[in-house]
Length: 341
Image (cartoon, rainbow, N blue to C red; front, side, top):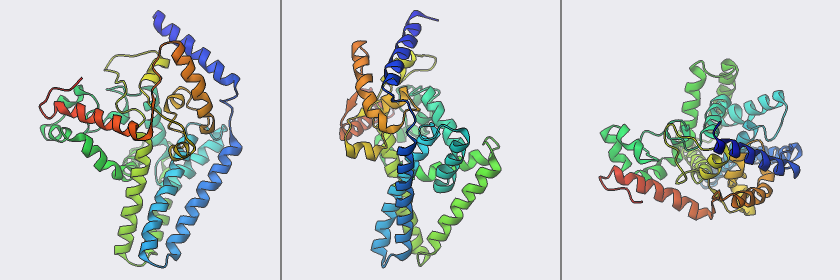
């Protein structure tokens, strides 16, 4: 093993020891029970309001509220997938079915497989599934690989990216269903049955709203805002950070830090992101409960500063601007322009 890689592993082991000494890797089951009760209560309230809404304005406002509840459920599904909430294998399996398949209509094994690959190879041009889009180039090298028509779209990809964010929730369902029926899913019959129950319950809710036009409008608002909110959590985490070219590798510590961006912590920001604004710390310690990430950031930032590793943190709107400008600059190659440095 090269000396640099060995040193990186030693550094990471030292960092993990510092974090563990503060008790930041211990499970936080009471915290997650409280978050689960709050999320389920929010979801139940949104469903009740939809059923008893006195007029369409209240109903459509409730569709936005339901999208908020759905994203909070999705954030819990993320944490459960990383074993942050519950450490027991059986408890985790049922929690994944509850949060993923039943409450979201998303295959938990599809999401886990995809997300674990992302964690293993963040911003890897040829391996990270989160930067494999047919009409979006995250690096200039991706532009020539696409059809001429798609390259023309890449010229305005920063705007296209924003436009397709509301479709993210629908795309999750479509892709996870393909996964379940492809035979690659774990317990495919059980997963399909639970997802089917989700759509049956959701369909019942839509048909109880008083007309198909109202149901379509409620569906569009709910799913669109859900996709937009869910995407807003993930859009700022890696876009515009270091891209790792095919065949290249950095040491684990550098790779996770340099490819990730933090968004400054605040009670409101932490709540909106479900702790994922501490993306660097989350990537370094995926099993760390979200309510310990802010404390870990102090340790990680100081550790990185001592070793000259850039630890990038910025404001909420600045994070979106950085990602947008990166996509726009990269798209210059598809517009026939030189890509600015």
